[in-house]
Image (cartoon, rainbow, N blue to C red; front, side, top):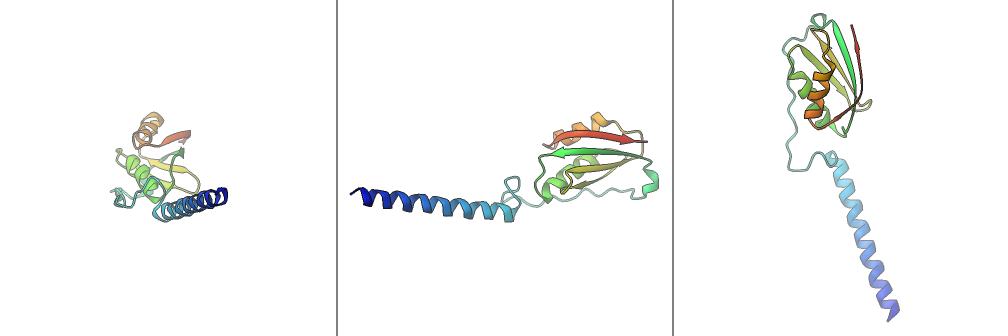
Amino acid sequence: MNNVINIVIIVVIAALVVFGIANYIKKLKKGGDCCPEHEETTKSIKVKDRDKSHYPYEAKLAIDGMSCGNCVRNVENALNALDGTWASVSLEDNMATVLLKDKPDIEKLSKAVSDAGYLVLKRKSTY
């Protein structure tokens, strides 16, 4: 009787492990927890003025909480929605580089990132 119970327990545990691994692989392929299957890919906000010479200032923000391309677009969109900014975000470096037409308002940039659901860890601006 104990052998039967042990076998049933082992089979149930094995099934749960297989199910867990399958779900984990599925999430990795779909972009992680932040991007469910039914969610559409975020469209990028295009910067109208793409002449880098118009952006004499630069700010860099180290960002936590990004895990996929949609996260990158969400942060870029939050920053690019601000007047006079042109942002590019690196998922690999967890870094946003923001070109600005006026002196950086780091608090304003950080708030835009926070409002998008991400955490700014470190901030730096150059003139």
